Amino acid sequence: MSILIRAAEREDVPALVRLRLANAERHLQLDPAVYRVPDVEDVRGHFEEVLSTESKVLILVAEVVGEVVGMVEVVLLADPPAHQILAPCRAAEIHTVVLDGHRGEGVGSALLTAAEQAAAEHGVSIIYAGIFASNNGAVRFYSSAGFGPRGILLSKQQGAPLAG
Image 1 (spheres, helix red, strand yellow):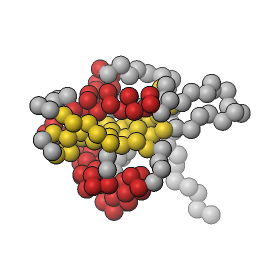
Image 2: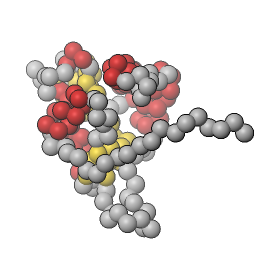
Image 3: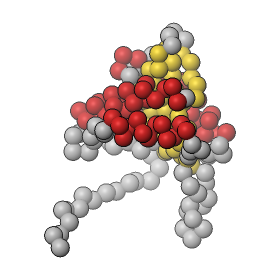
């Protein structure tokens, strides 16, 4: 099977929307308290804006037999401000999506390899894959590609705001 990885184009917006919504549905099954299915027009607007302007988001798509079956977003992050203690380091977040019928065929790995190369071309030296621990499939996928823990992100759910 031949997988073509290329930069996303405006003509890919319908496929990108389909991928985002399919990914949302899949995540909603993991934990409906954490995930949601966004409005289709909001998703379409996001991708149209990212692909029509100079953006800090790089989007690559995977095609199999002319059909877009996966995408990866590389979100370029700003360097830490001078007043912070973190050493300057060009970083990016990564988000990979592959349609269910094409998982396990190497599409995700091909996207990830291309995303790492695109990030390196933009001077990125570290890539973060923010994953909730309950998403075992994503943890397995990124771990098998060499991603590992880097610190711990702790959170605390706040109660409802007090009525004023």
